[in-house]
Amino acid sequence: MPRTIKKKISKKNSDTETNVQEKLEDIRKSFQKRQKTIAVYGLIGLSAVIVIGGIALYRYNANVKAQQLEYEGVKVYSNLYRKTPAPGKEKARNALVFFTQAYEKKKSPGLLLYIADAHSDLGQFDEALKALDTFTKKYSRQQTMLPLAYQKMADVQLRKGNREEALKALGKIASLPGDLLKDVVLAQTARLLEQEGKKTEAIAKYRELTEKYPASPYAEEAKAKITEKKES
Image 1 (cartoon, rainbow, N blue to C red):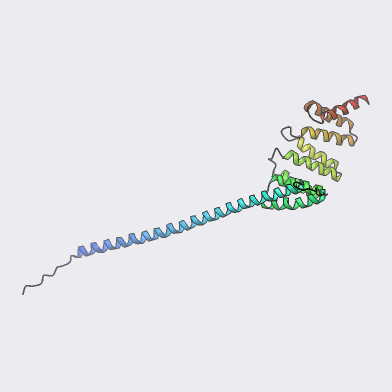
Image 2 (cartoon, rainbow, N blue to C red; image 1 turned 90 degrees about the horizontal axis):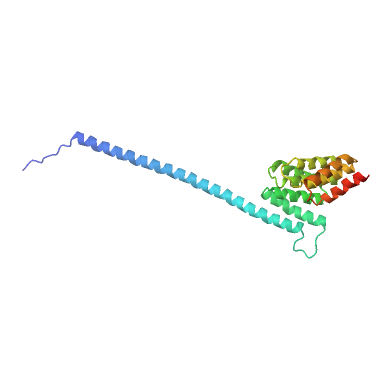
């Protein structure tokens, strides 16, 4: 019988095959590790998107709700769509609820002015001043609304009987840039000075009003006061 020929496997070939298998295993493990890393970062990214989307949705809903509450407050405060207008304090009280709830949903300068007006109508002068003080500190860059806030502050101080504080508030408007409400400030300041017996200072304010704002609705009053002073 012929002898069986046994093939002798080369040790070199065996080592090569082992090395190849080890490298393939390393590649497989590296690939699995990379997949896990991608999955983790993917979950983190997805979570971030969900969180950001949730915050955006919450803010959107809060803004919409705040606008709805503000609109309801304005309707009540202005007696819109009512056959029988509500009394002043009743409408102010009911409107204040809507304005306060709207401000809790979304802070805005306009709502603070509404809140101050409602408190003032209710005779809650300290609360009105608190809202206006918050406005002047928080929204000091609202150049178109800031003079109005100070004027309301002056009116509230007058209702409290604090003429000096009212004059300070009017002085804040005078120091602001632009001409918004400046004629009103001069007229109100002149009246207050006149009431305090400071006739000369009052006339100076009236004269400034006629010179700077001749088209103002307060100009005729100022001219009359100046003429009255000359004739006396």
